[in-house]
Length: 248
Image (tube, rainbow, N blue to C red; front, side):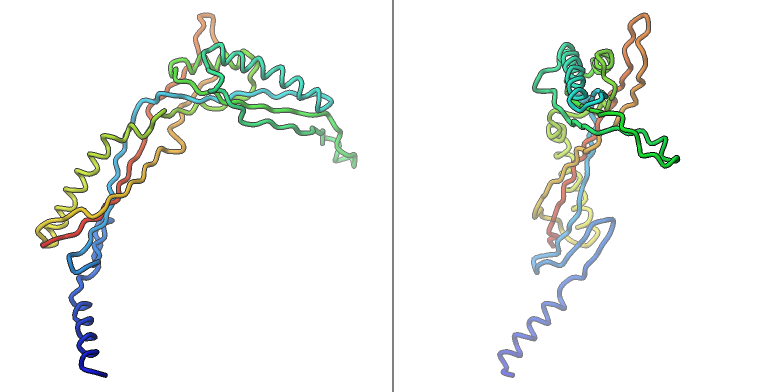
């Protein structure tokens, strides 16, 4: 081994020995990434709760007939009434979407205990549509109108925001301020002069499942009281991941 190679190996060992150790505290990580200073990595989350500005309800009908063709025809007639009722409540055509159609044979299995084969009854068709509205206060009357028009399957409502990202504008500023304070605190505790921002990455959660209200489906009374619906608030969470370099 030459003296030059030995000198290079000795220098490498010296750098490894001088590298600060890995430290963890409170979900944050300090890694010795470079000789310029260790890297502090952590995340900050901000939750924003707002009154929803749109709601989606699902409604459908189920029909039965001796033949598949007749079952589909009866269902189409019933669905036309349902869609017309939604439009009458101000729902636009582009805000009404078919979410599922199913056709299946129906059998009576009650005689199977006697060794008899199941008795064929006919065909059943189920059809569902989803309607989205920005009239939050009209959700109860909309549900009542869909039921009055023949709707037998009701799903929802689910509430959300048209532009959920707009909710997070202020949250970003709050998260960055909190990160700056946290990085400065780590630097002070670790004996460094300060912390320099290296990178920021964002991850936002709009909740694929916002809070679902409890809807009491009941017949309208003589005074015409609509089904009560409480939209509450929907929650969006912003998570920013930071990397800071601690400097002496």
